[in-house]
Length: 86
Image 1 (cartoon, one colour):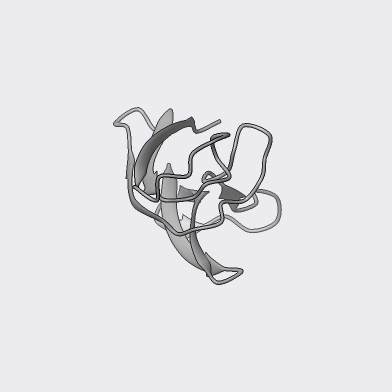
Image 2: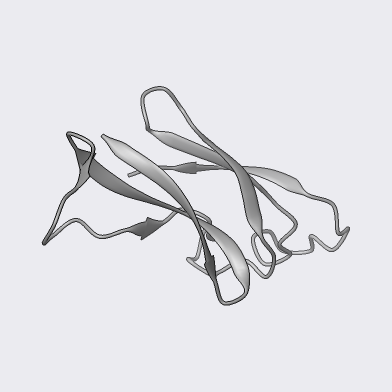
């Protein structure tokens, strides 16, 4: 089972996930991984909010006004992104 977490990091909210077992965090081995990032792994320059995970936990959708996720995105309007949850 995986759990999504929204955390404040570098003054912006980011979307992360972590595997769970029986409702408890696993220790020693399974890290918290960031979902809200560009295709090259860059952080967003704005908050990432309104996240949702698909029923089979394969994909995570989130909204962001970040301009660093897609080249040329300068309209200051929130965009919806869908990222694989590997």
